[in-house]
Structures are given as C-alpha cells and as structure tokens.
Image (tube, rainbow, N blue to C red; front, side):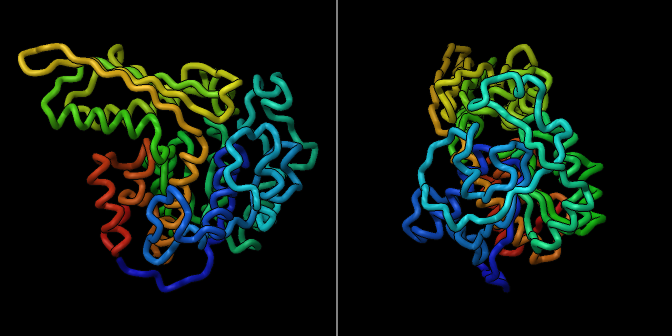
Length: 373
C-alpha cells in the first residue's frame, strides 16, 4: 500500500452535530488515545492516513444547546442520546457555528419534548459568504454532512459553500448529490471531490441484507419477496416519522438491496426502511429482515434476522474511512464523484457494486487506481 506525501492532519468540519457527529467526535479522540489498540476500526491505514490523522476543526448546527459551544461540549448535549463510549474529549475545542435553518428542522420536531427534539438558537445564522469565509479561515479539507434526513435545501446550501471554498464533501445522508449527474458535474468543474450518498453502516441492516441477498444469488436461490423494517429512538427516527422526509431514505435503502438482486423485485414484493420511532431505544436500532424464496425444484425457504446495533457509532466508523479517502482524492487532484471510494461505503453511490468487489476497488484506489466517474 502506498503512502501519501503529506502527514498533516485532515482538517474536517461537521455539518449537523447530532448523534452520528457525537460518535465521530468521540471516535477521533478514542483513536488518538488508543492508536493501534483501538477496537473496531475499519481500514486502520489508508494510504498512510490513520484515524488519528483526522482533526475536527468546527461544526455547524442550529440547536441552542450546541451553537456557540465546542464540539466536545456539544457531543453529549441533548437531544443526542448515543452511547458514550469515550468521554475524554476536552481536546475537541472546535467551535460550533449557527447555520441557516432552511429545511433542516421539520415542524413536528419542534413540537416534541425538549430532551428528544430540536430547539432553535436565537443567534443570527451565518450567510453563505460567511460560511465560505469560515471554511477558508479554518483551512478545511473535508466537510462531513450529518444533517437530518430530508434536508434537501440545507444539504445543497452547504454543498455550494464547500464547492466555493474548495472543500471536499462526504455526504452521509440520503440527499442525492454524488449520485446526481448535475451535482457531479458541478464538482468536476470546481475541481473538488465528493463521496456519497448515505452511509452504509459498518455492520448495519443494509450490509447484512445485501450480504444475504448476494449469498442467495450465488447459491441459485430465487428470492421472491423481502422486507427490512427498522425501529429506533434517536432524533433520526423521530425526524423520519414525517413520511415526506422519508422518501429519499426509503429509496436509498431499497436500491442498495435491489442492486444486488439476481432479479429485481416488483415494488409490492420489497419493503425497506424505517418503520417506527420507539423513544426508549434511544440510539439503538433494531432491524427485522425477512427473505422468502425458492430452492431447487421450487421448494420453499425463508430466513428471518433480527439485528440490534448502536446506530451512530456504526456510521461514524465509516465516516472515518470516507474522510481519509476524500483527503487522498484531494492529494491527487481528483474531482467529481469518487466512484471507486463511494461504492463500498454508501447505500446510493454513483455506481453500485457487489460489496466484495467494492472492497477490492477501494484497495486499488488507495494504491493509485482509477477513481472518478
């Protein structure tokens, strides 16, 4: 594996300092403290970049309990409810700035209990010019987007800021940017790389569902119908209780499974996506997966799986991979969607690949192989 020419930190800003951001903030400090002894790290070394090379320099949010605070202070502020697996994060002093509301906050989120939902800061929101200037002042390398699902306008706003400031983007949510041809072309013209869209968790429902689907295809099993029903208790699930905000998430998760089907299923035969909000689960996500099909001669078979995970560390692990891959792309002067780096990490990448192949493609990319669409 080749090494990069620069050992300087990867200066990273977070947009949306919720549960996934909390896990990322904890994770960066955890990896710096533990080094090679850190547990559960995906790709400990990528082209000479390790997780501890990520430096979180700022955040953007709208919540009164986070704006004006440091990343370390905001990581455990309500309504964040993810597991506190590493609490020694005083070093995370990057400031959180007040971004614009746009469509980042659904109306129903403001009607729920304060400890479970958002409360807007009264501080004036930064303009686009302000944010571009801030990104340049910070000398930011990478922007990670963790806004609530359904934040189309807000994601596009921050993406425009990143394009103008020359900051690489990692889009962790199902607003289609890397996988949208118009946005892809904007990134190419600006000379800026983007990875996305919508993280596959490290060991979550989508990757398990895809693996079972691929196994069925390899063994000649005809899959007739399937579902994946997810419940959880964090703000993401509460946000998605509004069905209009769920459309892109359902599309992203469904296409991730359809893409590895031997034969695409009719829409009535596949149902995938968040199904309910259960407050006491907090950041735990419970996924119920069922597949029905036929073996040799048409003999019936079915399988049911129950997966119970802490949701946000599952995404943060892959964010640490994506940040480093984005920096490698910047180091090489690449622009536009980094397809070979996106297929393994995201549910709705510019190009779908079977996961084993996508893993090999990432390794080839790190060694200097083809990268961009």
